[in-house]
Image 1: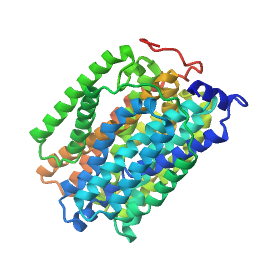
Image 2: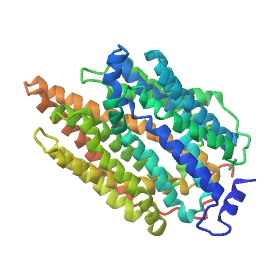
Image 3: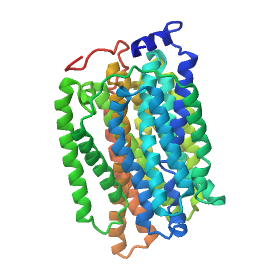
Image 4: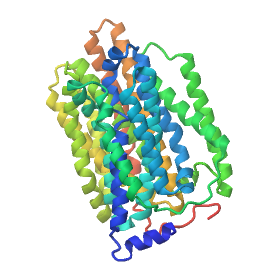
Length: 492
């Protein structure tokens, strides 16, 4: 059965409804995606414990997070081709099998090397699930109610990374680090079993050639950039190693060659990642805003715990709990924001959302000082979460909804890739700014706590400027054309 027929069948009785089978597929993918994305950020809080238990350096322990992001950035660009080439059920089983295997390996790991291997296997499965979810929702859900469904996806993409450190802190306060994987494994296996037994195929596989040079360039380009930016974000302000500059240069060059090759191959519909998605203005502007929003989210997730712990003296668990209400508010608001989007479109949501995010980041530049009461940061983080909730769902729905159906898989892969690169870039930009400013203040004899607070304020200033610039394009994102099946240049 073709994708068009599937969509027609799911909306034939009620234009704004989906069938029970479609709901099963989407809900199973949502639960699976939440579990796998959650694992992307749980390791950050665990680094100090792992350094002690595994007898490794901070750099070696940090690789447990860096390798996960690097694998995601390498695999995700290929998923557009995979979704076109293979049936939904087979891809889901493969993804959750890899994730479950990686989780089991990590839980039983006797040392750092095996734990690192488990994280890489986990990331391979994770990289497939998220684009598969977005593509499936765009295929099955009628345009009239896509906003609400995309609100659920917003919970996965924004809330799961946000509450990861909190969950990690709670687990580590009473249990071994192994339980970060032990507690996840039964949920992953249950999703795998249910999917293997009940998930139908909701796509029609087609011939999608694999261009090996594109795969290599994609790995070098996206992988090199994410690795370089992640390493830059882990720097301490003592200068940038020449090897790191070389990694970023190789990544940028490979990415340029990758883009050139895709532009050439897509003329015959042979591209690994079809970039004709960017010929749609709404998609291009939405992705640009998405980059800024993800940089703000991931940058804040790394800076706020550092400030709360190193400047205000809070424990890891207390700082994680302080950030939990904001993550919960974002999750609770996402479906509501989706329903509002279905009624009024993106403009009434995106403009106030971007204003709130910029306003909070400007506020952080004033209040990030020793002695500021912690409830002030709790309130500010909740407001920031409200602003991000108003942004993510309209961006997901508008960007992918503006594409013709044959580009859904490529658009989903692009958005998921951007998440990884923007997250790494946000972390690198915020941390490197903080480290450089703190080092400059420290060299003048300033107390370390005061110097670090000054560095964090400088990092938030950069984020505030970027977020302010993002207000302007919010006015130019329109509700997707429900007809939206028109070709976007080249072969239809």
